Amino acid sequence: MRTDRFSGASEDDQRHPFQRDHDRILYSSYFHRLAGVTQIVRAGEEDSFHTRQQHTHKVAQIGRRLAQNLVRKATSNGIACPNIDPEVVAAASLAHDLGHPPFGHKGEYTLNRMLQDQGEEGYEGNAQTFRIITKLAVRFDDRPGLDLTRAVSCAVLKYPWLRDEGSRDKSKKWSAYRSEAQEFNWARAGQPTDRQSLEAELMDWSDDIAYSVHDLEDFHRCNLIPWHKVLNDSEERERIISQTISKWHEKPENAPQLLSDAFESLKEQLALYGEVLQERYDGSYALRLGLRQMTSALVGNFILQTDLLSPPKIYVPPETRHSVLLLKTMARDYIIANPALAAQQKGQERIIRELFGMIIEDTRWGVDGSHKLPDYLPKRMSYLTDFSKTVQRFAADCISSLTEREATRLHSRLVGYEGGSVLDPIVR
Image (cartoon, rainbow, N blue to C red; front, side, top):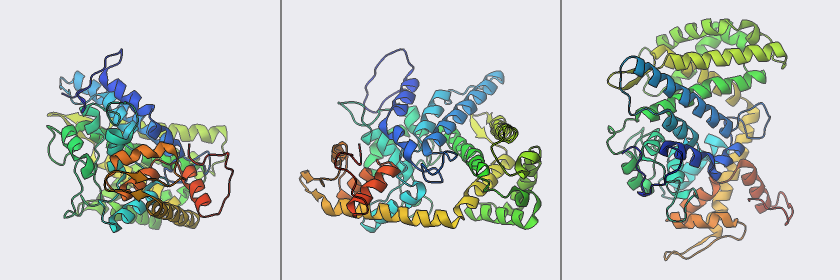
């Protein structure tokens, strides 16, 4: 059943089982930590940039509204949709980024490379998310993790397979480590092989919408998007299309034409807000109002253009998906091309690499399960040894439980850049 839990435990209160899942995720320390983790720009950089937690809240809101709208449409059209519940989509959306380590994708790539260099399976943010909800999160004294329902556990699986060294795609992105294979197989019971559940698909689509609209809004507020070039310069238009094609997984042969058509459609939508986009953003009431109306309209349109077909299948018009791909390119490239960010990420990579090396070097890992941890690691990390078969995986679990401020301060003290105070804990 969709409400089954891996442990078999069943608690009753005033909430539906899916509502309990939502609340367990919301109140977990791993979710609280996302307030200190990068979305695109370093957490704490400026108040105008999204943190990973703010992004996650918006993904959950969009996911809930998407599901509610589809259920409403299906009901009016006489289509049964027992496998779409707005609460499941919202809960999975809240959980989907729990596994992101400090410094976002830069931290993820660094940990993955270092683990694989030492013969480990690697690191993947989605797989770490599943590890957290099934093993690492602290909630019960008689079972590990958050013990979520089968439906929510399945909806979290964005890439519904284990890592496969022989597959180009499955060796890059996957949703569970082999250490959680049993829980993965339980969550995926009854699902078509290698296909997302309907609720996982809605979570994934909600993530794309939030990224493409709200991150772009951040950079507009900072005047980092050259809209006059985007909307009027044919060379810039071709550059954006070319960049989008280069990142498009399994793109069709006519990708240039598809994106060109989508660009023109998107341009027509954005033209409605020409005054907002052409002026330098200064925080004035008129520009704030116009920007809010534009982002609300974009999100609303993406939600309304999503349909449920019979038999149950999520349908998004290709032009809508292509528009989101273009917006994601703009959000990503205009900030990532910034040399200041490149320098910042180089330093972040060094922090992750050196912390990983020091934890491994300073940990005594006994094959009999007796471990001696470095004195500088806080007590709250000691229980992680119960779920790690190797010191390398333990080090990765430790680092991925830190906020960026904690990682930076811990590294600064360990390498002697900052003395700090003995009365001020680095990691709480």
